[in-house]
Amino acid sequence: MNENKKIPLKVFIKTFGCQMNEHDSERMYGILSDHGYTFTHQEKEADLILINSCSIRQKAEQKAFSILGRYRALKAKNPRLHIGFCGCIAQREARSILCRAPFVDLIFGTKNIHRLPQLIEKMGKTHKPIIEVIDDDSGRFEQFLGKIRRENHIKAWATIMQGCDNYCTYCVVPYVRGREWSRSAGDIIAEIKTLALQGYKEVTLLGHNVNSYGKGQDCTFPELIQRIQPIPGIERIRFTTSHPKDLSEELIVTIKDCSKVCEHIHLPFQSGSDKILKRMRRHYSHNDYLKKVDFLRKIIPDIAITSDVIVGFPGEREEDFQQTLQLIETIQFEGLFTFLYSIRPQTTAGNFSEQVPNNIKQERFNILLQIQNQISSARNALLVNTKQEILAEEILREDKRTSSIEKLRGRTRSNKIVEFEGSSDLIGNLFEIEIRKANRFNLEGIIL
Ligand code: SF4
Image (cartoon, rainbow, N blue to C red; front, side):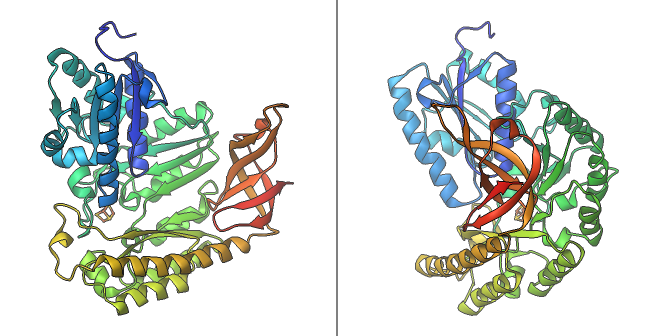
């Protein structure tokens, strides 16, 4: 336990954003646990609240600041409470956070997580707000190995690279996560072997652009997957996120040849208009994207493809939007994450002329969502009466009186959520299910 009784011992972390942020929070929990902290799911009980913020869209930023207001009220009632602000917003604008919210005790950047115990200690001693946002790549990952505190005991994330060199004109990632940086294959393999020994069945390889993994390393992404494939105990391998321009034929063949790699790819296309793709600096065209998908489906016929699309990028006219709809109709994605364009600080697109009015953005968003909902339902319906391999992940509903389990939830290899009846000892196991019913966002089935 912590010997310094002045330092708070119960921590609550509120995480916004992508899996990279979720995984960073797992690291923070791990490192704090190692220094004697305990965890609470109740904000009111916490002595330390950390807000791990996301900066990818304006809405995500607003959410982080709005919750900060709520925590201010908690702090007014509990003077022992310390509040920390970290993640992508903190990396970008630490000083202005303090101006906006002077009651925040600690602000640190995305590259300073490993310094958390020292920063908290300093905060306890000085009783002044502490800010640390410095580029510190020293042992960013390796010193966390064995300390990451994962909530899920079946599926784990493993970071393989971070940052991005692409500078898409709308994206803030290169400014808040820095230049692209890959971990050594040896370190990644060691981490995944440890996960397998701990009983994890599935690993998701994480990075802002995993396809270009390997800069400065003696290993490419397909080679890395081939080295992970034989690790005993790991039954499923997933990865995210991919960039269409870096999705090579070699990688597609590797996905097919490595039996543990699941038949699902998240491949953001962002727009169906060549004019907009150029303004976004995406380095592929509508047709290039279609060709990649054709090749993917030729080599792996049952691959599930999901994607991201931005609606209302500056300069997007009706004809550009129609090309986006055309692409969606042609590809028939399993699922689509649709975002309204919002100006991000420091990005080139923020200065573009022809910003699209909000009402038009919203109108296009609604049209797109309606079309994609129909496609998702139709894609799910295709699976009715098929047999699917399931990894049982969690108990959905339990009969408290008899303690017999009523409903479980798992995922297919194509990443579809399936609900089915079963008992708790199935959690963490792989088995076959027959799909009996398809809904828009999930499937229902029975164990064979
Ligand atoms: S490739 Fe992805 S992470 Fe990199 S700048 Fe473009 S959108 Fe952002």
